Length: 485
Image (tube, rainbow, N blue to C red; front, top):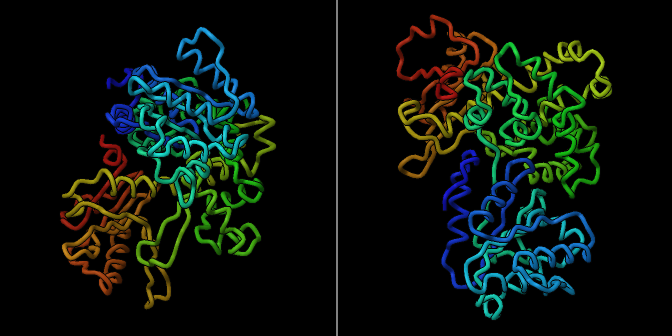
């Protein structure tokens, strides 16, 4: 199935859809496509419909009766029916979609499926009944029905637990954001530092370049501040309020103020449930549900401490959310009025550096270690990469490890390949290396660290004394290397 020339990357998603639509199965099949808004799901599925000659239906926020009329009109137009088509209920509508595939494999996409379920909660059960294995309408159809939605908490539950459609789907495809390297290519930015700074604000969401900034990328590092004032910090730009909309689009969120406070807590560095609860003025148990909803929505991610399996930490998963909480939200009224934005941006620089750039750099370093490092970098391939805390009883303190790289040993247990420290704006020197050596010594009580390497990541520069070292156990990674330049 040829990929459209105007589609950037998405080879994995396009191939999965092609295999699903052309599976050759003699009965109808169901697929579920999800992903946060602005990732290009609709573009992907519209392209699929065009290439395969399928039916694409964009659901709207409407009553059940209006939605059924829209469905009937779409089916009638697709079938080129000379007479008006009408459905009395969703059972008739779903059977009509199955009938479309009577003669050939055909894709039928229902985009923004959660809108329909909001007005017709029984719809998943109706689809389940329509896809009953011994039902003639199911066995005689080769319709490839694709349900698509952006409400991540809803879509995640569509096939989970005791949900009606559990066990019915032959495809469950999540369309992710672009990773930091693909995002740099998509934005057409060659300078690694500039690519990193842009990624720290807008992440890897394709629509933020195409629709939200009209292909206006910063021309150079010198243009970055001006670009920030043109778009993310500009009240007239769609990017300005986008972080708020990402939160409001989740149907499970009943108290937006509490959820914003939880995100602000995590952005400020409160990574544990207790720390988050203390920041928002609630008990730890009271923030468990908001944390769960934000995780399902893809706005937060939960990580297990690399060295303490009973300790869970939370990180902001969407750069634009962290940027909004750190830079815009504390002075929202001033930003919204648009008064002296240059002064406001200058005042926000310390928060931007410590709460946005710094944590994002650490995450990019972990992603490099997990997905882009070669076997010779660490003496093996990474199976798990995380951050962690190492206790130092002798000094009555604890040390934060930004990057811990593990591989699965021959006996099934984990082997510690490397520990690393990431510094964006500091010159990394021998003192940083000595700190890692001390931590490696502490870890030798739990792991065989005889082959554990010490990785130093710098977004600025390495001291000459460090670069002159010729040690196999020391790995130096700068921004050009992170970006494969």
